[in-house]
Image (tube, rainbow, N blue to C red; front, side, top):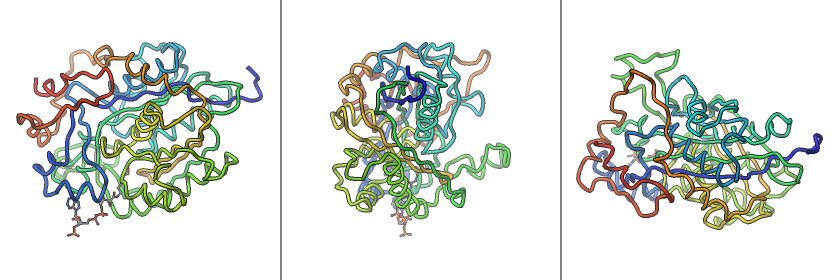
Length: 397
Ligand code: UT7
């Protein structure tokens, strides 16, 4: 390979969504809300909920292995694993380290990227820089979240928004032009307490008092976050496009963070682009934070919305406030993704557990009670190929 010019191409992509579905109607039975309110204010119809045996690492490992299979390489070919999450399995070790072992890789450096909902895009930009610097050949970048265990199911302003899942890409070095182009990353700490999780860190270690005060749950100022999101998604995407030497009209598809349909519509309007250029799947998954962009990217490609030569912008915003965008000139055969997903069955992937230790039941009581009701939570037909249909019953096994 020519040492002077290295390009980072997306060669693999994959996603995993837990099989259990929590609908707006289910939430109507938990808090004072309505399907009509949730759909009209957010665009969300349903979201996925991880089963008790699943964790952020286990979902990340499935999505990551699917991306590796799509790329047509072996897990051992990966020399760096970056995992964006705000819901790690543990404070330490990193979830990326657990994923490394679960996918059967022995040589990669692995670490988590903490930039909330922008975590995947921050990881993607970091992978691109490693490749362009000649420090890595194949990088696995994952966004994975298990948010349903960090929500207050008495707070209707947050519990209706979020869901679980994972998405991943493989970025590979090449001397062929194309692949990842202009990057823009920003952080605006004036928004630091607009979305946050107060307790559990060194400022407020977990205690009976922090739990009694519900400080281990996500808190959010929705309106302020909304205002920031509409502005920053547009400006961050525009800067990434400009750094790529392109114009907004040169972009074939935007993959925005899937937080709220009204935010995505405002961005399309701000960029003077039709909604057909914005990929949307938040109706099915809700806001999956760092997982939302890679799940949407993998789904857009597998559903035929991306072809070789297209320019695609991934753009996210989140707590911090962070935001990030990368423009990508797509070079991989889109047909590879469906086979990559089908090649990895979730039941074949496992994350090693510690010896002589078992966690308490991880499912929040309000959610467990709802899921236990007969017919309470559906398992749909359209789950990603290869996912187990048995997941619902296992929650209560
Ligand atoms: O990844 C980043 C994460 N965060 C986001 O992207 C969030 C960005 N913000 C938003 O998406 C929106 O601000 C929300 C969807 C969170 C809220 O929508 P909104 O249009 O800003 O509603 P609001 O907060 O102004 O509330 C309007 C009304 C209030 O009632 P009153 O005071 O007008 O009587 C709320 O109490 O709607 C009420 N409300 C609800 N009603 C039914 C708030 N949540 C609900 C609910 N169901 N779930």
